[in-house]
Image (tube, rainbow, N blue to C red; front, top):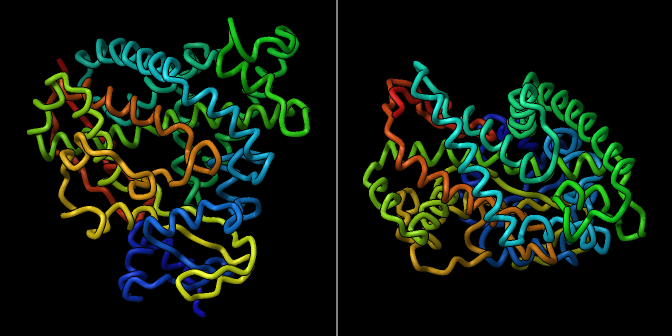
Length: 409
């Protein structure tokens, strides 16, 4: 069986959909880095993949991904009871409706402050500016100290961790260096908080997401060591700043299909949410997720041997015409007033966030993207000539120019 590592690196998001077309839609069998792989697709595959009796995460993630995107010892690498206990901490922090509103309000405040300075500038790279807005907002909301003079550098590091996780060469090296810097910074803050704050500030009055992580106790009853606590604080900060990618895509959509501006300005929160969902479906973010077969498994009459790397197709499923009529048409109406099935729309993975590995921050992503889309729709600016192409071979991808705007008012 030929190894597909080079093809994946060359094709990026298009690799798995292309292989599926060649197999007539059957599961794709191949090798990546010499390891046996089977790639599954569709809502039934989502349910199969996120059943822990079928697929485990421990040992599945390549070291370059752990050392850039998630961090050693992160919740993403756990299974069973250790995963459920650690995941419960994130659910407490990230799915509280009041907390989501507070973060959204803080982002709107930071956006207002940022926009006030854009009118005096010849050009604004929207991706970079939104990363700064989100970095300042999430630190303030989470209770993580961030001196103003350090904010731009921290924003660049948080972006670099995401930008370099799927690459080799300079982007990977930048991502690793960024993670080392930020883990050291946050581990020092964890130690300072524990020295100053005791153990009683995880919940109730005075609690913040940062303190919740600092004082969390894992399945064995022990607090996280300072470096692991820093890793999990980053797993709150980094995904929030990653909304920069979706915001750049939202700006791209409003530029290509400006008729959506008026609808977003109309004050219907349901439409803003539908627009955000369609941005997440239409534009490329995560190509797939992976785990290891926990035992000898059967899938559609095919045997999966223990230890096989099982991939779940995300980008391809979000463009499957059997699920999404006219999948390459940008159409927020498909989500307006229509319930979203969690095993169909999977831009950030699937499953149950309470019991499985589904991202617990999706509520925050949707709330922030909805709010930022409305703010963008109300902003007057020009889009000068630039390269707005979105290369599918690059993971993660974004408009090449970062989406430059001028004449902001």
